[in-house]
Image 1 (cartoon, rainbow, N blue to C red):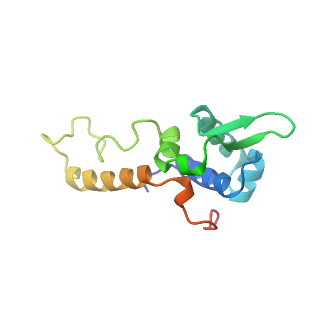
Image 2: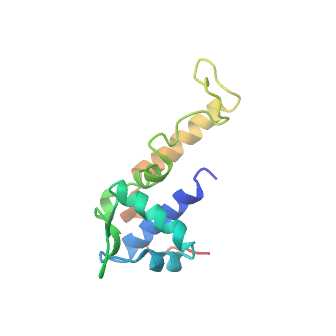
Length: 137
């Protein structure tokens, strides 16, 4: 809908890590648990690590773990690590000059929806999500 497949997988992976303890988890094990492509998820996990949300360790006993406690990780930071810092900005129709002074046809509706979505993602932390909710289909 509003999130790319990569951002959805990033959210699912961080939720999985938050629910499954502090120890390192191999990317292939996370991918298997979430039923997502392993190579694709490995790149997403590396992006999350580069953005300071995960810690990555190589070698025996290595894997991925959250860099911070789940109570300190906002969903918006996970999404922006994948989508970019400008996630949620811009025109719904992709017009370069959409503004309050020169709004596109969807400007008012998108402004409200964007504000609600960004507010929810910013105010929700991994620790606040219900435990045991399905992460796979």
